[in-house]
Amino acid sequence: GHGRCLYQQELHVPLLFKYPGTEMRARRTNVAVQLPDMFVMVLESLGIPAPEGIQGGLPPRIGHPIVAEVYPSSNPTPTAQDGDWQAIFDEDFKFLWNSKGNHMLFHLGDDPGENVNLVSQYPDQARQMSFKLKEYLAKLPPPGPPAPARELDRSTKDALRSLGYVE
Image 1 (cartoon, rainbow, N blue to C red):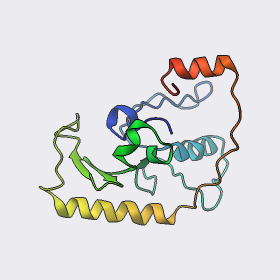
Image 2 (image 1 turned 45 degrees about the vertical axis):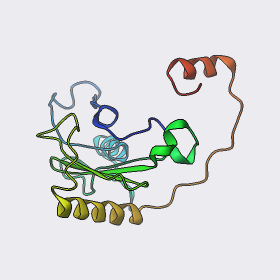
Image 3 (image 1 turned 135 degrees about the horizontal axis):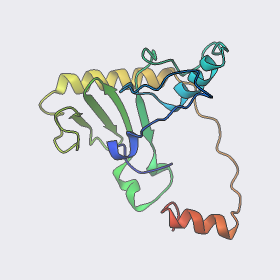
């Protein structure tokens, strides 16, 4: 529930991974990863094999597509009218599926600001990426039930309000 869209300013977050001491020398990479991949990276650095069936993978070959999801319409807000979003990346292409049918396709190498929707220019690319997205998501286990609601203390509410999470 962090955010209401899947544009790059919310998704493209630098990841700094610090090993203890000087085990590994510093390096920089443009390999995209997701949070489940970090778990596998930590296990690997500790010499522990990843459990069977884990969703994450090790860079540079993580073994799964890079995807993102946001479901603002499940929590009624003024932005819920925009619908739910799912994204998948394929090299420089990024496809955004929308529950309201407002799908988008961007070429991030040519258009890093995501200003030009290419769905009508590259319908085969959009269809292929949409299929790959649905196929991958269908293989994932369903999410568990939400945690029970609880009352937050005033300082927590104030902190969340200052960050724009609650009104």
